[in-house]
Image 1 (cartoon, one colour):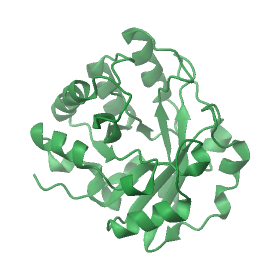
Image 2 (cartoon, one colour; image 1 turned 180 degrees about the vertical axis):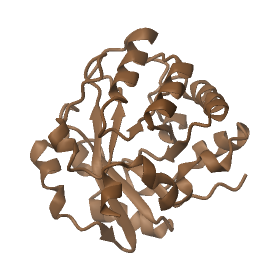
Image 3 (cartoon, rainbow, N blue to C red; image 1 turned 135 degrees about the horizontal axis):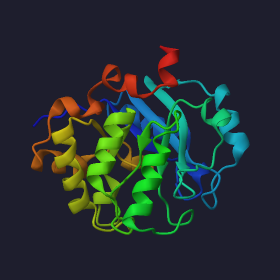
Length: 243
């Protein structure tokens, strides 16, 4: 299949603490790849070494266009417990263009399948969370049918994370878990986003692992929201207010 890619909505700059390029360098890389939208989603404060609360509060001053690329500035929030609590308050999340919610080892223990599934379903109840990040790590087993049903019901987007599928990734079992998730997304007609999770400029827009898996799964093009701004906009509830 020929999947149209207009965006990469999960990337990090050096202020996340373990990434290596500036916002301008990431935007230039997106322009060089021909992307129309770039999401810069820094790790929220509970991630060791990441930026503090004032960083997110001050994003309002940053222009939302660089090198012809529209910028969506937000956070990858950390799920802190199995009730879906995250490390930015609603009043702070409301100021961001988008929010990805993820399970990360420094912030929450590897739970049981029931605990992890509950955490992801509960975080979907947060009106400011748009995307569930890399729900593919076998160290965090998940009930994928419940996950896909929950995303469909709560109007959230599940991420196919390109980095998870890389040999360099520390996550485990991603390929098998992603194929299972894609199978269920086809069944329930639940859309997905393919994102790079780039921590360096060369990785911006690098989605080849995810796109290969989509082709292998014969995943419908119309369920891949990367194709256009118009496709993804209804899932970015805060950002869409900007038009």
